[in-house]
Amino acid sequence: MAVLAEAVDVRLRDLPVAGQPPRYDAYLAFSTGVEIFYGGRQAPAALPYFQRAAALDSTYALPLIWAAWAHSGTALDQCDSTASIASRLRGMRLTRLEQMQIDRVMARCRGDLPTAYALGRALTEAVPRSELMWEQLARDALDADRPREAVTILERLHPDSGALSGRAGYYNWLTNAYHLLGEHDRELEAAQRAQRRFPRNLATLRMELLALAALGRGREVNERFDEIKTLPADPIRLPAPVMREIALDLAAHGDSAAARVALARTLAWHASRPGVEQAQQAMRFERAEAYYAAGYADSARAIAADLARAHPKNEQYAGLLGVLAAQRGDRAEAARLDRLLVGLERPLGRGQAGYWRACIAALLGERDTAVDLLARALDAGYVYQVRFLDAHVEPSFALLRGYPRFQELLRPKG
Image 1 (cartoon, rainbow, N blue to C red):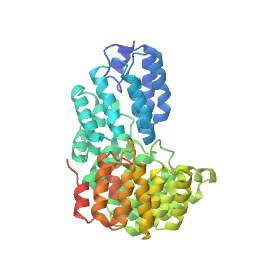
Image 2: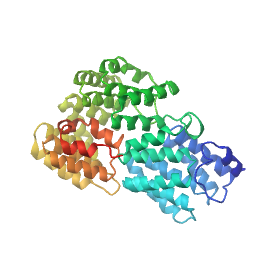
Image 3: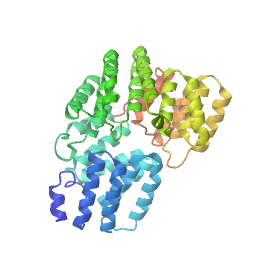
Image 4: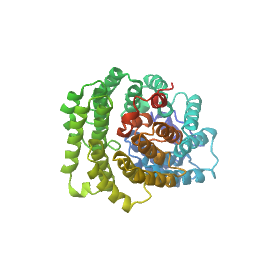
Protein backbone atom coordinates (compact mmCIF):
# COMPACT_ATOMS: atom_id res chain seq x y z
CA MET A 1 0.00 0.00 0.00
CA ALA A 2 2.83 2.42 0.76
CA VAL A 3 4.47 1.68 -2.60
CA LEU A 4 1.17 2.33 -4.40
CA ALA A 5 0.55 5.52 -2.39
CA GLU A 6 4.01 6.85 -3.19
CA ALA A 7 3.45 6.10 -6.87
CA VAL A 8 0.28 8.21 -7.10
CA ASP A 9 1.24 11.01 -4.69
CA VAL A 10 2.26 13.92 -6.97
CA ARG A 11 4.30 15.55 -4.21
CA LEU A 12 6.26 12.43 -3.25
CA ARG A 13 6.37 10.04 -6.18
CA ASP A 14 9.55 11.52 -7.69
CA LEU A 15 11.41 12.01 -4.42
CA PRO A 16 14.56 10.02 -3.62
CA VAL A 17 13.29 7.17 -1.43
CA ALA A 18 14.73 4.08 0.19
CA GLY A 19 14.49 0.70 -1.44
CA GLN A 20 12.57 -0.80 1.48
CA PRO A 21 8.94 0.42 1.50
CA PRO A 22 7.78 1.94 4.81
CA ARG A 23 4.79 0.86 6.84
CA TYR A 24 1.64 2.36 5.39
CA ASP A 25 0.65 4.21 8.59
CA ALA A 26 4.15 5.70 8.75
CA TYR A 27 3.86 6.80 5.13
CA LEU A 28 0.52 8.48 5.84
CA ALA A 29 2.00 10.44 8.75
CA PHE A 30 5.00 11.46 6.64
CA SER A 31 2.82 12.51 3.69
CA THR A 32 0.70 14.68 5.98
CA GLY A 33 3.81 16.33 7.35
CA VAL A 34 5.11 17.04 3.84
CA GLU A 35 1.82 18.68 2.88
CA ILE A 36 1.86 20.88 6.00
CA PHE A 37 5.54 21.79 5.68
CA TYR A 38 6.07 22.10 1.95
CA GLY A 39 2.55 22.91 0.85
CA GLY A 40 1.43 25.01 3.81
CA ARG A 41 4.92 26.29 4.77
CA GLN A 42 4.24 25.57 8.44
CA ALA A 43 7.41 23.85 9.60
CA PRO A 44 6.64 23.67 13.36
CA ALA A 45 3.20 22.14 12.72
CA ALA A 46 4.72 19.49 10.44
CA LEU A 47 7.30 18.23 12.94
CA PRO A 48 4.94 16.02 15.01
CA TYR A 49 3.91 14.14 11.85
CA PHE A 50 7.51 13.50 10.84
CA GLN A 51 8.30 12.34 14.37
CA ARG A 52 5.26 10.06 14.42
CA ALA A 53 6.24 8.51 11.06
CA ALA A 54 9.76 7.81 12.34
CA ALA A 55 8.36 6.28 15.54
CA LEU A 56 5.99 4.00 13.61
CA ASP A 57 8.76 2.68 11.37
CA SER A 58 12.31 2.82 12.74
CA THR A 59 13.78 1.97 9.31
CA TYR A 60 12.05 4.91 7.58
CA ALA A 61 14.70 7.62 7.11
CA LEU A 62 12.81 10.21 5.04
CA PRO A 63 10.67 11.54 7.93
CA LEU A 64 13.81 12.22 9.95
CA ILE A 65 15.45 13.93 6.97
CA TRP A 66 12.43 16.15 6.53
CA ALA A 67 12.28 16.80 10.27
CA ALA A 68 15.88 18.03 10.09
CA TRP A 69 14.92 20.23 7.15
CA ALA A 70 11.90 21.58 9.04
CA HIS A 71 13.98 22.34 12.13
CA SER A 72 16.57 24.20 10.05
CA GLY A 73 13.77 26.19 8.41
CA THR A 74 12.13 27.41 11.63
CA ALA A 75 14.95 29.44 13.17
CA LEU A 76 18.69 29.70 13.20
CA ASP A 77 18.98 28.25 16.69
CA GLN A 78 17.13 25.11 15.60
CA CYS A 79 20.15 23.92 13.65
CA ASP A 80 21.28 22.22 16.86
CA SER A 81 18.13 20.07 16.63
CA THR A 82 18.91 19.39 12.99
CA ALA A 83 22.39 18.23 13.95
CA SER A 84 20.91 15.88 16.58
CA ILE A 85 18.70 14.29 13.93
CA ALA A 86 21.66 13.95 11.58
CA SER A 87 23.57 12.16 14.35
CA ARG A 88 20.63 9.77 14.83
CA LEU A 89 20.51 9.08 11.09
CA ARG A 90 24.17 8.03 11.11
CA GLY A 91 23.05 4.92 12.98
CA MET A 92 20.70 3.90 10.16
CA ARG A 93 21.43 2.23 6.85
CA LEU A 94 20.83 5.12 4.47
CA THR A 95 20.78 4.94 0.72
CA ARG A 96 23.17 7.19 -1.17
CA LEU A 97 20.30 9.55 -2.07
CA GLU A 98 19.10 9.74 1.53
CA GLN A 99 22.63 10.52 2.69
CA MET A 100 22.90 13.29 0.09
CA GLN A 101 19.66 14.84 1.33
CA ILE A 102 20.68 14.99 4.99
CA ASP A 103 24.15 16.20 3.98
CA ARG A 104 22.53 19.04 2.02
CA VAL A 105 20.38 20.06 5.00
CA MET A 106 23.39 20.03 7.30
CA ALA A 107 25.49 22.01 4.81
CA ARG A 108 22.85 24.75 4.85
CA CYS A 109 22.83 24.68 8.66
CA ARG A 110 26.59 25.08 8.77
CA GLY A 111 26.38 27.93 6.29
CA ASP A 112 28.33 25.89 3.72
CA LEU A 113 26.13 27.03 0.84
CA PRO A 114 28.53 26.00 -1.97
CA THR A 115 28.36 22.39 -0.70
CA ALA A 116 24.56 22.63 -0.43
CA TYR A 117 24.44 23.86 -4.02
CA ALA A 118 26.68 21.01 -5.23
CA LEU A 119 24.54 18.44 -3.40
CA GLY A 120 21.36 20.02 -4.73
CA ARG A 121 22.68 19.68 -8.27
CA ALA A 122 23.69 16.07 -7.64
CA LEU A 123 20.18 15.29 -6.34
CA THR A 124 18.53 16.70 -9.46
CA GLU A 125 20.86 14.62 -11.59
CA ALA A 126 19.94 11.53 -9.56
CA VAL A 127 16.17 12.17 -9.65
CA PRO A 128 15.64 14.47 -12.66
CA ARG A 129 11.85 14.13 -12.57
CA SER A 130 11.49 15.57 -9.07
CA GLU A 131 10.30 19.17 -9.36
CA LEU A 132 10.68 19.52 -5.60
CA MET A 133 14.40 18.82 -5.96
CA TRP A 134 14.69 21.24 -8.89
CA GLU A 135 12.93 23.98 -6.93
CA GLN A 136 15.36 23.44 -4.06
CA LEU A 137 18.29 23.64 -6.48
CA ALA A 138 16.93 26.99 -7.69
CA ARG A 139 16.96 28.21 -4.09
CA ASP A 140 20.53 26.94 -3.68
CA ALA A 141 21.52 28.74 -6.90
CA LEU A 142 19.95 31.95 -5.61
CA ASP A 143 21.92 31.66 -2.37
CA ALA A 144 25.07 31.03 -4.43
CA ASP A 145 24.51 34.41 -6.18
CA ARG A 146 23.40 32.67 -9.37
CA PRO A 147 19.96 34.23 -9.97
CA ARG A 148 20.12 33.69 -13.75
CA GLU A 149 20.52 29.96 -13.18
CA ALA A 150 17.63 30.06 -10.67
CA VAL A 151 15.38 31.70 -13.28
CA THR A 152 16.39 29.14 -15.93
CA ILE A 153 15.49 26.28 -13.58
CA LEU A 154 12.23 27.76 -12.32
CA GLU A 155 10.91 28.72 -15.74
CA ARG A 156 11.07 25.03 -16.74
CA LEU A 157 8.93 23.89 -13.80
CA HIS A 158 5.15 23.65 -13.45
CA PRO A 159 4.06 25.72 -10.44
CA ASP A 160 0.33 25.28 -10.99
CA SER A 161 0.23 21.49 -11.26
CA GLY A 162 1.89 18.42 -9.85
CA ALA A 163 4.30 18.60 -6.92
CA LEU A 164 4.46 22.41 -6.80
CA SER A 165 0.74 23.12 -7.03
CA GLY A 166 -0.84 25.14 -4.25
CA ARG A 167 2.53 26.53 -3.20
CA ALA A 168 3.41 30.23 -3.40
CA GLY A 169 7.06 29.59 -2.53
CA TYR A 170 7.95 28.92 -6.16
CA TYR A 171 7.02 32.48 -7.08
CA ASN A 172 9.02 33.83 -4.14
CA TRP A 173 12.26 32.40 -5.54
CA LEU A 174 11.41 33.46 -9.09
CA THR A 175 10.58 37.08 -8.24
CA ASN A 176 13.59 37.37 -5.92
CA ALA A 177 15.84 36.15 -8.74
CA TYR A 178 14.39 38.68 -11.19
CA HIS A 179 14.81 41.44 -8.57
CA LEU A 180 18.50 40.62 -8.16
CA LEU A 181 18.94 40.63 -11.94
CA GLY A 182 17.25 44.03 -12.22
CA GLU A 183 14.62 42.58 -14.56
CA HIS A 184 11.74 44.26 -12.79
CA ASP A 185 9.19 44.08 -15.63
CA ARG A 186 9.53 40.29 -15.60
CA GLU A 187 9.48 40.35 -11.81
CA LEU A 188 6.18 42.23 -11.85
CA GLU A 189 4.68 39.84 -14.41
CA ALA A 190 5.64 36.83 -12.28
CA ALA A 191 4.34 38.53 -9.12
CA GLN A 192 1.02 39.31 -10.78
CA ARG A 193 0.75 35.68 -11.88
CA ALA A 194 1.30 34.71 -8.26
CA GLN A 195 -1.33 37.22 -7.11
CA ARG A 196 -3.89 35.79 -9.53
CA ARG A 197 -3.08 32.30 -8.29
CA PHE A 198 -3.05 33.29 -4.58
CA PRO A 199 -5.11 36.50 -4.30
CA ARG A 200 -5.39 36.51 -0.51
CA ASN A 201 -1.75 35.80 0.25
CA LEU A 202 0.53 38.32 1.93
CA ALA A 203 3.62 36.72 0.39
CA THR A 204 2.39 37.30 -3.17
CA LEU A 205 1.28 40.86 -2.39
CA ARG A 206 4.81 41.49 -1.10
CA MET A 207 6.20 40.23 -4.40
CA GLU A 208 4.05 42.63 -6.40
CA LEU A 209 4.74 45.68 -4.21
CA LEU A 210 8.51 45.05 -4.29
CA ALA A 211 8.41 44.88 -8.09
CA LEU A 212 6.42 48.13 -8.26
CA ALA A 213 8.89 49.79 -5.86
CA ALA A 214 11.81 48.75 -8.06
CA LEU A 215 10.03 50.14 -11.13
CA GLY A 216 9.72 53.56 -9.51
CA ARG A 217 5.98 53.31 -8.94
CA GLY A 218 6.11 54.46 -5.32
CA ARG A 219 2.77 56.26 -5.40
CA GLU A 220 1.07 53.04 -6.49
CA VAL A 221 2.87 51.13 -3.74
CA ASN A 222 1.60 53.50 -1.08
CA GLU A 223 -1.92 53.49 -2.53
CA ARG A 224 -1.97 49.73 -1.99
CA PHE A 225 -0.04 49.68 1.31
CA ASP A 226 -3.17 49.19 3.42
CA GLU A 227 -3.86 45.88 1.64
CA ILE A 228 -1.05 44.39 3.75
CA LYS A 229 -3.00 44.60 6.98
CA THR A 230 -6.23 43.24 5.47
CA LEU A 231 -4.77 39.86 4.50
CA PRO A 232 -4.78 36.77 6.71
CA ALA A 233 -1.59 35.78 8.50
CA ASP A 234 0.98 34.02 6.33
CA PRO A 235 3.17 31.26 7.82
CA ILE A 236 6.37 33.01 6.74
CA ARG A 237 5.66 36.60 5.69
CA LEU A 238 4.37 38.77 8.53
CA PRO A 239 2.92 42.30 8.09
CA ALA A 240 5.57 44.27 10.02
CA PRO A 241 8.70 42.99 8.21
CA VAL A 242 6.88 43.09 4.86
CA MET A 243 5.97 46.76 5.39
CA ARG A 244 9.52 47.63 6.40
CA GLU A 245 11.10 45.68 3.56
CA ILE A 246 8.92 47.46 0.99
CA ALA A 247 9.80 50.85 2.49
CA LEU A 248 13.51 50.00 2.40
CA ASP A 249 13.25 48.86 -1.21
CA LEU A 250 11.60 52.15 -2.16
CA ALA A 251 14.56 53.96 -0.57
CA ALA A 252 17.11 51.66 -2.22
CA HIS A 253 15.60 52.49 -5.62
CA GLY A 254 15.77 56.20 -4.99
CA ASP A 255 12.21 57.08 -3.95
CA SER A 256 12.99 58.49 -0.50
CA ALA A 257 9.69 60.41 -0.29
CA ALA A 258 7.59 57.28 -0.82
CA ALA A 259 9.86 55.38 1.58
CA ARG A 260 9.23 57.96 4.32
CA VAL A 261 5.47 57.65 3.83
CA ALA A 262 5.67 53.85 3.96
CA LEU A 263 7.79 53.90 7.13
CA ALA A 264 5.41 56.33 8.83
CA ARG A 265 2.52 54.01 8.03
CA THR A 266 4.54 51.04 9.28
CA LEU A 267 5.13 52.74 12.62
CA ALA A 268 1.47 53.75 12.82
CA TRP A 269 0.55 50.09 12.29
CA HIS A 270 2.88 49.08 15.15
CA ALA A 271 1.24 51.65 17.44
CA SER A 272 -2.21 50.32 16.57
CA ARG A 273 -1.49 46.74 17.66
CA PRO A 274 -2.82 45.32 20.96
CA GLY A 275 -0.51 45.77 23.92
CA VAL A 276 0.15 42.03 24.26
CA GLU A 277 1.28 41.86 20.64
CA GLN A 278 3.45 44.97 20.96
CA ALA A 279 5.18 43.42 23.98
CA GLN A 280 6.34 40.33 22.06
CA GLN A 281 10.11 40.14 21.74
CA ALA A 282 10.18 39.74 17.97
CA MET A 283 7.65 42.53 17.48
CA ARG A 284 9.64 44.91 19.70
CA PHE A 285 12.81 44.31 17.70
CA GLU A 286 10.95 44.74 14.42
CA ARG A 287 9.60 48.07 15.69
CA ALA A 288 13.10 49.15 16.71
CA GLU A 289 14.37 48.39 13.21
CA ALA A 290 11.50 50.41 11.72
CA TYR A 291 12.38 53.33 14.02
CA TYR A 292 16.02 53.10 12.88
CA ALA A 293 15.05 53.07 9.20
CA ALA A 294 12.72 56.03 9.72
CA GLY A 295 15.37 58.10 11.49
CA TYR A 296 14.04 57.87 15.05
CA ALA A 297 17.33 56.79 16.60
CA ASP A 298 16.42 57.50 20.23
CA SER A 299 13.25 55.39 20.03
CA ALA A 300 15.15 52.56 18.33
CA ARG A 301 17.93 52.69 20.94
CA ALA A 302 15.50 52.58 23.88
CA ILE A 303 13.95 49.33 22.63
CA ALA A 304 17.23 47.73 21.55
CA ALA A 305 18.94 48.53 24.86
CA ASP A 306 16.10 47.01 26.83
CA LEU A 307 16.19 43.87 24.70
CA ALA A 308 19.98 43.63 24.97
CA ARG A 309 19.85 43.84 28.77
CA ALA A 310 17.42 40.92 28.85
CA HIS A 311 19.30 38.94 26.15
CA PRO A 312 22.99 39.92 26.32
CA LYS A 313 24.11 37.17 23.92
CA ASN A 314 21.74 38.07 21.09
CA GLU A 315 23.74 39.36 18.12
CA GLN A 316 20.77 41.22 16.61
CA TYR A 317 20.23 43.41 19.65
CA ALA A 318 23.93 44.11 20.11
CA GLY A 319 24.22 44.72 16.38
CA LEU A 320 21.44 47.29 16.24
CA LEU A 321 22.91 49.11 19.26
CA GLY A 322 26.28 49.16 17.47
CA VAL A 323 24.69 50.52 14.31
CA LEU A 324 22.96 53.28 16.28
CA ALA A 325 26.22 54.17 18.05
CA ALA A 326 28.04 54.39 14.71
CA GLN A 327 25.25 56.47 13.22
CA ARG A 328 25.53 59.10 15.97
CA GLY A 329 29.34 59.11 15.73
CA ASP A 330 30.04 57.41 19.06
CA ARG A 331 33.11 55.51 17.92
CA ALA A 332 34.03 54.24 21.38
CA GLU A 333 30.61 52.64 21.92
CA ALA A 334 30.53 51.30 18.35
CA ALA A 335 33.96 49.70 18.90
CA ARG A 336 32.83 48.16 22.18
CA LEU A 337 29.78 46.60 20.53
CA ASP A 338 31.88 45.46 17.57
CA ARG A 339 34.14 43.57 20.01
CA LEU A 340 31.06 42.11 21.69
CA LEU A 341 29.83 40.87 18.31
CA VAL A 342 33.18 39.16 17.69
CA GLY A 343 32.59 37.21 20.89
CA LEU A 344 29.04 36.33 19.82
CA GLU A 345 30.13 34.64 16.59
CA ARG A 346 29.32 30.92 16.81
CA PRO A 347 29.75 27.76 14.71
CA LEU A 348 26.14 27.63 13.52
CA GLY A 349 25.69 31.41 13.54
CA ARG A 350 25.89 31.67 9.74
CA GLY A 351 27.50 35.09 9.71
CA GLN A 352 24.81 36.96 11.64
CA ALA A 353 27.28 38.75 13.93
CA GLY A 354 29.59 39.53 11.01
CA TYR A 355 26.75 41.10 9.04
CA TRP A 356 26.06 43.53 11.90
CA ARG A 357 29.76 44.33 12.15
CA ALA A 358 29.70 45.21 8.44
CA CYS A 359 26.78 47.56 9.07
CA ILE A 360 28.70 49.29 11.89
CA ALA A 361 31.83 49.69 9.76
CA ALA A 362 29.81 51.11 6.86
CA LEU A 363 28.25 53.78 9.06
CA LEU A 364 31.68 54.70 10.45
CA GLY A 365 32.86 55.31 6.88
CA GLU A 366 35.18 52.29 6.88
CA ARG A 367 34.17 51.08 3.45
CA ASP A 368 36.80 48.43 2.81
CA THR A 369 36.34 46.95 6.28
CA ALA A 370 32.57 46.90 5.75
CA VAL A 371 32.88 45.09 2.41
CA ASP A 372 35.38 42.61 3.86
CA LEU A 373 33.08 41.85 6.81
CA LEU A 374 30.03 41.51 4.58
CA ALA A 375 31.94 39.13 2.27
CA ARG A 376 32.92 37.02 5.29
CA ALA A 377 29.32 36.98 6.53
CA LEU A 378 28.12 35.82 3.13
CA ASP A 379 30.84 33.16 3.00
CA ALA A 380 29.67 31.98 6.44
CA GLY A 381 26.19 31.45 4.99
CA TYR A 382 24.39 34.63 6.03
CA VAL A 383 20.69 34.32 5.25
CA TYR A 384 17.88 36.49 6.61
CA GLN A 385 15.26 37.06 3.91
CA VAL A 386 17.29 36.52 0.75
CA ARG A 387 21.05 36.82 1.09
CA PHE A 388 21.81 39.43 -1.52
CA LEU A 389 18.46 41.25 -1.30
CA ASP A 390 19.13 41.95 2.38
CA ALA A 391 22.32 43.83 1.55
CA HIS A 392 20.60 45.53 -1.38
CA VAL A 393 18.03 47.24 0.89
CA GLU A 394 20.04 47.52 4.13
CA PRO A 395 19.91 51.21 5.21
CA SER A 396 23.32 50.93 6.88
CA PHE A 397 24.85 50.28 3.44
CA ALA A 398 23.34 53.37 1.77
CA LEU A 399 26.77 55.05 1.49
CA LEU A 400 28.27 51.90 -0.04
CA ARG A 401 25.88 51.60 -2.97
CA GLY A 402 28.10 53.56 -5.32
CA TYR A 403 31.32 51.92 -4.09
CA PRO A 404 32.83 49.59 -6.74
CA ARG A 405 33.95 46.88 -4.31
CA PHE A 406 30.45 46.72 -2.79
CA GLN A 407 28.85 46.65 -6.23
CA GLU A 408 31.16 43.85 -7.34
CA LEU A 409 30.40 41.80 -4.20
CA LEU A 410 26.67 41.95 -4.88
CA ARG A 411 26.94 41.54 -8.68
CA PRO A 412 25.18 38.32 -9.82
CA LYS A 413 27.75 35.66 -10.65
CA GLY A 414 25.55 33.43 -12.77
